[in-house]
Amino acid sequence: MQIKIFSIPINDSGIMQEELNTFLRTHKILDITQQLYQNPLNAYWCLSIRYLDNFNSKTISQSKKIDYREVLDEAIFKKFSTL
Image (tube, rainbow, N blue to C red; front, side, top):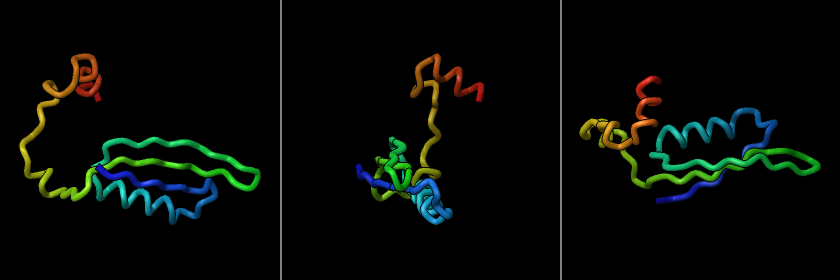
């Protein structure tokens, strides 16, 4: 497991957001923690992302399908299946 930190200013032109989106699309994300920080000059989002290293989307897509009834508890699976 690896950790990557992103700090994105609120007034970002979109460059940092695209960097974040590219990272999210190309890695197996385990967890994201976000916090809005402010100082007198600026405000920015700080994101801590835990992810798996050496993620290969082809490997995931070729693997067996996941039976979410077995993975999720009953209440969460009911919400999942509704979505």
